[in-house]
Amino acid sequence: MLRRVYTVVCQTLEAQSVARNMYQNVAITPKQLQSIQNKQGEPIQAAEELLSIVMNGSGNVFSCFLDALKQTDQQATHDIIVSSSDKGKYSITCPLHVLL
Image 1 (cartoon, helix red, strand yellow):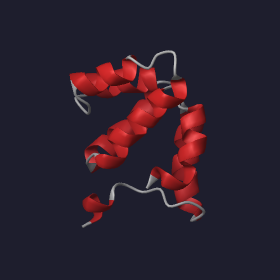
Image 2 (tube, helix red, strand yellow):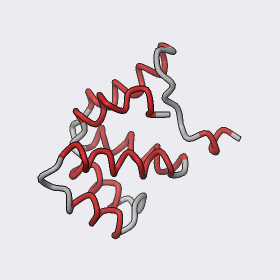
Image 3 (cartoon, helix red, strand yellow):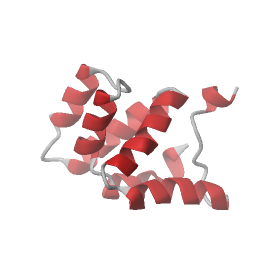
Image 4 (cartoon, helix red, strand yellow):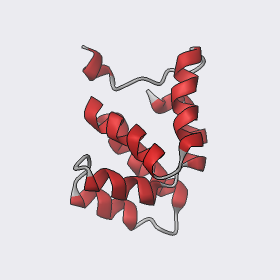
């Protein structure tokens, strides 16, 4: 789902704040949060870690991720994901197993 805009999202995502928000909303585990926080000096690696969690998670995790982007003032990254899907340019929807 996020695969086609993965690179752009990794470069724009502030994973630390999104991960904290997702943890507060019980969308990721303490272990997952810690793993992302351990990459504080490596923003792209932290973003990759968070995106991996989101892409392998449930539809609820994806929804929480989108909400967290808005709540952490990352509307531009949110818009990249959502508008790209709307235009059919990229394949960005909720995880496949949610659609089944």
